[in-house]
Amino acid sequence: MLSSSARTVSKNHTITQSSFDNPCRKVEFTSTSGQIGFDSGFVPVTADASAFPTWNVTVNDTAPVWAYCRQGNHCGAGMVFAINAVESGNKSFTAYQALAKQLNGTGSGTPASSSAAPSASATSSPSVNGASHLVVAGSWVGVVTSLAMMFL
Image (cartoon, rainbow, N blue to C red; front, side, top):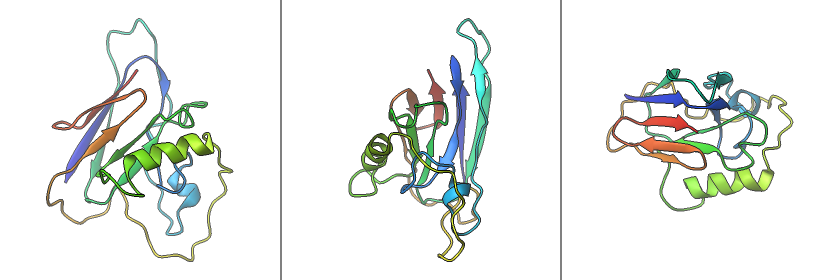
């Protein structure tokens, strides 16, 4: 089991689970297994704030978990992150971020049909074995030991 903590700093951001193939759409709109995923909702923080809200998610799986910021064009600008992403290959974090930029944050938000096999979930039950990796970019800053994310 792995706990990830996110802290929003200034402006208004979300931490919303997506899938690799649809980086800027909520996983609930693209899942064929009924997966809902996580979504922090918009978290506004003023520039002069001295206390910052924190949002936590527990990951019980070593499969990659993909997420993005739903605010305006943030995802299309590359504000995405991943937990347990591979470092190279066609499903790497770099490929995920490139796809988000290529699609420019677009998506219809239409639910998918339910005919395919289930996909991994951030709340599934297999135990974690081995190292977990948080990959961050854009305005995301990660600390691997505590897996804290900060939004700028």
